[in-house]
Amino acid sequence: MRHPTLAFLVGGILAFLGIAGLVVLDATDGFDVAVIQAVRAAGEAQLLGFLRPTTELGSTIAVTIIAVMTLLVGVAAGPWRHGAIGAGVIGLAALAVEIIKSTVARERPEVLDPILVERGFSFPSGHASLSMVAYGILAVLVSRSYLSRPTQLAVFGVVVAVVFLIGLSRVWLGVHYPSDVIAGWVAGATVVLVYASFTRGVSREPAEAAAAEDPGGPRSDRSAAG
Image (tube, rainbow, N blue to C red; front, top):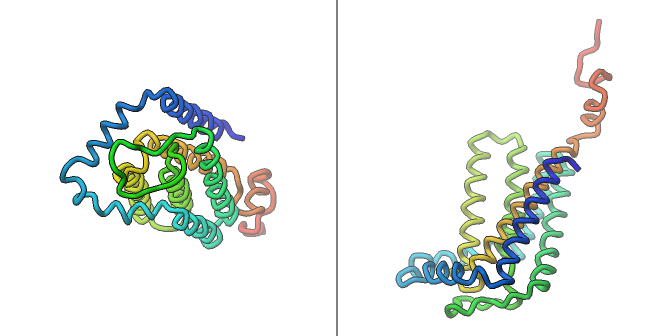
C-alpha cells in the first residue's frame, strides 16, 4: 500500500471516530438541534420541497445503478479493473455502513416531526455516505477518461451538488441529525480518496505494467530501429 493511500485511510478513520466519539458523548446535541431547527424553520418547507425527490438519488436502488454504471464506465473507458474495483468498493461500503449503524445504535431524531419516516438506526447517514462513495468513485473514473476537461469539471460540479443536496435532504426530512450526515460524508470521502490513490497503482493494461518495470524493453508502440 502506498503512503498516500495509508495516509488517507488513517486520517479518514480518525476523523470518523472523532465524530462518533462526540455523538456517543452527546457532545453534538446542541449543534444538531440548532441546524435542524434552522433547516426546518418557518417558510423553509416550500423552499426546500424539492429535497423530497432528491433524497432518492441516495437510495439503495440509485446507488446500485451507479455501481453498475461504474463498472460499465470502467469497461468502456478503461481500465476495466478500475470499474470492477469501484463497483466492489460501493458494495462493501454499503455493508460497512449497516454494521456501523448497528454498532453505534443511535436512534432517529425526535427534535421535530419527520416529513418522512425511516426505520433502523441513524448514525452514520447511509444516504450521505453511500452517495459520496458511489458518485465520487464515478467522478474519479470520469476524471481519468478521455472526455474534455470542461466536461470532467461539469461532472465533478454535478456530483458535489448532488451529494450535498442528498445530505441536506436527510436533515430536512427529519430522518438524520446533521452529525450523521457529516460523518457519512467523511466516511464516504475517505473511501473515495483511498480508492483513487490505490487504483493509481493498478495498471491500465498488462503491457503498461511491463513497460513501467522495464522502460528499455521492447514496446509494440515503438517503431523498429533501422
